[in-house]
Structures are given as structure tokens and as C-alpha cells.
Length: 470
Image (cartoon, rainbow, N blue to C red):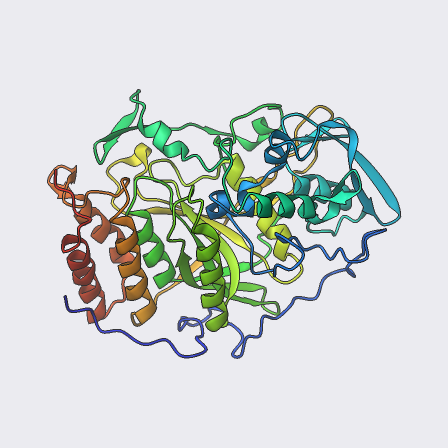
């Protein structure tokens, strides 16, 4: 198989060439830190709290785990996990936040939610953010696991202890269970056939209805809210076409959700986030052994390329590219972890949306989570998913990293039972292989290397054991 002509990335890669008028990233990025609007406050009785959150006291800011971490990393450990494992006991006033000479006590409920001032909060970060913004409206994050204490002990230490004792094992009640597999097992109205599996349409809920739901499935899809003139998008985003190309390729390989990270650079002067490279997680969401190794490898690869972790992506294989409640929670926590240095975004890719089963190109949605405008008595605090606009910049050449990642992804997924059978028919006489090539077309370089890459993908998939024509 002859690969297309490629360009080897420089030792310190920069962002792709941008068209006139597009902001350029810093020429020599050194992870610039934006100047906060107000001084960073220190927690009372907690001089080391710096609005960061980590797996343990020795872990770095790079070890941030989005949804991929549901299988074997800190993302799989929630308050409900610790309650069900017996680490925490529900009770009144057992949770506390010390902030600017004030102490706030919250109740831990049996379902893992936090009750304070007659409002339920689904996570420590949402409660901490709410508390701090009441005192300091300019406060952007709460970093709850580092700010909230259980009977005087920090939650992040209790979580780290549980995680170390269990060696990354995912509990049976973990949200790592792949809910798309459950949906595929159902045959109902508004269904389609995806690789011999029946898939039904999922309904979205409006955000305004969410706060009235005391109990709700965390896999519920929530419609986006939009920025406007009175509430403008807080920063601009530039995405390299090769990032979307690799994500598209990754998301087409499996009938289950796939996950990865976004590497890039932040220009605080222009308030522009440059997303330069995608880093797929080559492990299953419920992997109990390899998730931490994959996370460490990605962090090292980003460091080598002088990139910062600026977000995460995942697929909704058959549903619309709107976030679930779990996605919103993950995104909010990631934002809180890095708020002192740069923004972070979430990206959802939907390759086979059941609502538009004839569409050949994947649908992408970038989002950011804002605090709710107000929370009344008896309501539940949920972050507000805001749709983000972004500019896509066309790459002029194919990077070697892109071809290498494609090969590695195929090598991993060809051993998995949820692999798409690319030789099977998708619609009419069109195969799944045709579908992925059509979806990638708009993101290809315009020169000869674009058609070469399509041929490379064709040969890579057809010549591998991934093709199941049965």
C-alpha cells in the first residue's frame, strides 16, 4: 500500500497556515497564561487550594480525564461511586466549603447529589462554582473536588485513595456502561439499521425543562443554548481540518462511542483557541487496565509537540450531536480544572444520526458549559450547554502523524466486536467504506495529496481484517 505524500511535522509544530483575517497563534508558544480579571483568591483554612483539581497530590494538570476516563481513570469515580462503595456516608452537613472567611455546609444525599439552600447539585464542581460566584460574580470555576471537604477531608484525596486501592477497576455501577449498545438492542419506531443493529431515535430535552427534574437519566440529551449579542461567545476557535479529519475517521470505525483529546494552543491576547491536533484514545470506555497508560502516552505526545490539552471529543454514533447530562458534567469539570490558564471545549461527532439517515457527512458540535442564570428553591443545578462557533482552517499538506494514527486506530479496532463492517451495505448500493470516504471529502487537502489519502484509507480498511462482509 503506497501512502500519500506527507509532510513531516516540525520539532515544534505551529498551527496550519490560516487565510487572511484569521488570527495567528503565538509564534513561540510557551503555554501563555491569561491575566485573570481579579486576583486569585485562596481558600480559608486551605492555603494550597489553587482552583485546580487532580487525581492525587502528585498528579499534574495534564492528567485531566474526560469521558474516556469513565473506564479506569478518575472520571469513573463520582460521589455516587464513593457512596455506593462505602467511602462516604450520606448525611446532613457532612460536606463543607471554606471560602473567603465563610464556611458553607451541604447535605450529601444517597444518590450522590449535594443539597444546599434547597437546591440539588449533581457534582462537587457545580456546588463550588455556585457558592463562589455568589460571593465573587467574576469567579469562573469552583474546582469542587479540591474545594469541597467531607467531614474535614478533601474529596480529591478520598477519591485518589479509593482509586489507588482499586487499581483503576471500574465499579459495576460505573457510568462506563455503553448506553448506545443498549439502544442498539431495541427496535422501536423511528429506527434504522446500523451494521445489522437496530437503532432508534433519541429525543432531546430543552435546557429550561432540566432544572425541574429531581431525578433524570444521565444519558438524556439536552438541546444547546446559543450565545447572542448580549451574551457573546467568550473566545474564538480555530480548528485545523486534519483534526476533524482524524476525528471523523475514528468515529466511523465503531458502533460504540469513541473518545479522544484535543491538543492546541491558547493566545490570551487575541482570546483565540487554536486546536491543532487530535489524540484518539485507543482503548475501550470500560477498559480496566489500559486507560491510564493511554492517558499518560497522550500527555507525553502533547508535551513533545509543545501542545496543551484544550478539550476532548467523543462520538454519538447514531444520535444527534447534542450533549448528555453526563457530557455536560464532564465538560464543566474540565473547564474548572484549566480555568486559570486557558479555556477547554467539548466536541461531539455524529457519523450516523438516525434523524437524517441519508446524510453522508458527519455532524460536529462544539460546546462550552455556562452556569445557569438562576436556580430556585427545589430546583437542580445543571450547567447550561452553549453551542460554540468555530472556524475551520484547511491544511495544505498531510502530516505524517495523521497517517500513523489512522493505522494505529485500525489495528486497535479490528480486534473489537463493535467494529463497523466496511464491506457491508449502508444505503442502497453504498457501503460503509463509501460512507466514510464521502464524509472525509470536504476536509481533505485540495491538492493531489487529498485524493491520495482517500486511496490510502480505502486500502487501509479493505486490506485489513476489519472488513466483515458477512
